[in-house]
Amino acid sequence: MSNFAYERLHSNLQHLKMDTIENIVDNYLEIAAKDGKTTLEVLDYLVEQERQTKENTVRERRMRLAMFPVYKRLDDFDFKFQPSIDQTVISDLSSLRFVRNSENVILLGPPGVGKSHLAIAMGIEAVNAGFKVYFVNSGTLVEGLKNANMKGILEKKLKSLGKYDVLIIDEIGYLPFDGEDAHCFFQLVSRRYEKSSMIFTSNKSYGEWGEIFNDHVIAAAILDRILHHCTTINIKGESYRLKERMKHGLKTMQK
Image 1: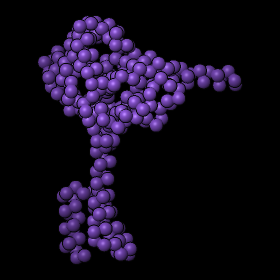
Image 2: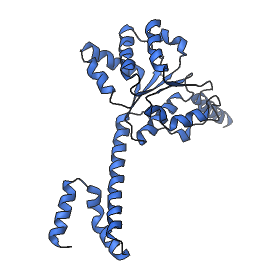
Image 3: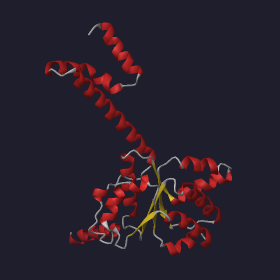
Image 4: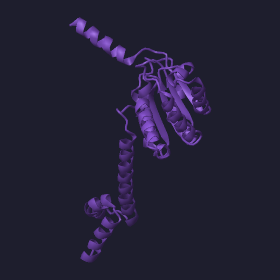
């Protein structure tokens, strides 16, 4: 390879932002020459390394933007401890068909039974599949919507949240919403209805959502839109956190 061709190759790789190929091309060309690789094999390897690096970079960026509070996987979930969960339903959800069909998922149950774990795990599956995901606590979400409404930019805020393929809203029901909260939440659900997916976790049954929103009519309207295309997972088991505390307590007593 002439000096001119060598310099132009690296210059073009920099211009095209093909950093991975630029970093490995010199060493790999030497290895390929020794191994008798064909031109096609060399190109295939270099382009594949560039593709993998770019995909990993994009995936890591989507993972950061998703704002998951912790990293949870479906493989780490203890289904034996929560026998009320139908694993075939979780398996179907992990295929992400519900995301492609703009359907919703609601995880109901008392604190500590693994609702957030499953929601985060499904969100991570979605990120790895190339979808845009955003995780937010319900209180934080509603506060942001209310502030946007007060400033007259609720439409802009809803449009911003609309760019996510999956919106995960955690812990609905731990704190009650006032009238403006309920109005803003309804606007969000209506905007995403049949367009993109939402995953909710709640410690309240559907019959109690009227109390959450302090308005049974608007709660019914919200649920009507959410449940139209929705999978409900009702977890009736014990708390993982309580199990761990009890285990720790027993160990302490045994000492």
